[in-house]
Image (cartoon, rainbow, N blue to C red; front, side, top):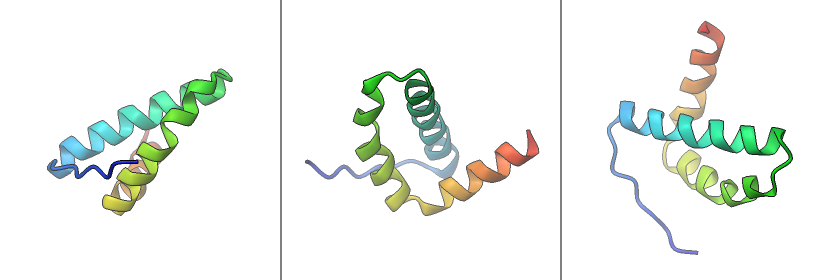
Amino acid sequence: MRKVNFEFNTTEAFMVYDLILNTYETLKKNKDKGYKLYEPLLKTIEEQYPSLKEHREIVKTID
């Protein structure tokens, strides 16, 4: 697997992460096997931007 570097500012990175995570969760909830394709991408993003996961939890709490 090829390593990808993301060059986003924090807002852009959060929006991309949130979109990918929402797609992953929807596919998984609907029992679509395609969700497995998103796991390596999410792992890479969470390793490069560990604060995104925490930020998303805060946003979910506010909503």
